[in-house]
Length: 225
Image (cartoon, rainbow, N blue to C red; front, side, top):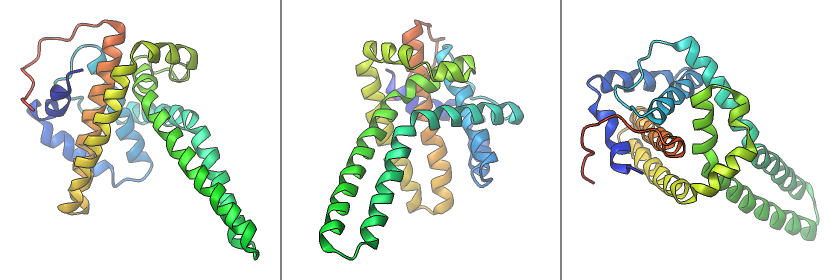
């Protein structure tokens, strides 16, 4: 995994600032804008998986990106169903506990809700662990069924456990660094978060490229980190 390349590649595009600004502005368009951004990142994942990451995808296919983003949303929701169901149950337990006058049932509901929250967090980590696989499969073929091919994805995970663990940890660090945009202003975090997602998507594409054995095109040297 070329972590340095994933972190620095965006800034090697001659028009990176324009493309990041467009992506950041789309964040302010609820739902439609978010889906378009998701589709754009799927195109980026596909580029990297095919062995090329520069230039960054152009913002010239909003309709196509909207469809891709919708597919990505469907795949993400299906994979997250256990987390969603558990969160709903945990919330219901908390509501039941609050409405109970007796201390014992309230305490029991609180304990169960806490356990549910912990389990929900662990399940979220599991889903995040598999994200590079199911999103990159979807990105390459644009078929929802490929993003939901659980058996094939689990088989791929067994052969790429270390890569997936590295991506999970690096993506977490990237998200923390990107959140420092809050120190600038609320607008700043929109653009730093967009850049952070782009870096993470590069790692997703790298995982798919390693699975398929695709050779990367000659690139400029990675920045030193």
